[in-house]
Image (cartoon, one colour):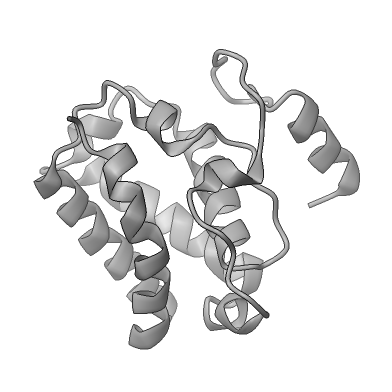
Length: 156
């Protein structure tokens, strides 16, 4: 990501061209929900930024089309979702990105996400990672970083 774009995201992350407007918030890498992995091993296991982007693109397509959880995504900005998921995954995998999205609780507020929905999301993410050729051990390491976010995502 270019330095100029990174600076713009940190100042005004609300929406980029092609995305629907959102309420202002302060961008912070801590909003990604997990600290990044040490070193570049996980980024390499996910085939760098290009691989992460392919995983995110496939993950989003699968979820929008999914008969079980697709309705959760129906009214959401797919362009913004792809961008912020890419940034989140890229940041956590230590592949050289910053995260400009909202925190997990704010991002998922009022979506009504239930435990079964989260389980389905894990399945669709595993499918996207497998299609990219990410090894099972790397998938599990990544999922273990994401798992604590459940408490901020699930509807209480």
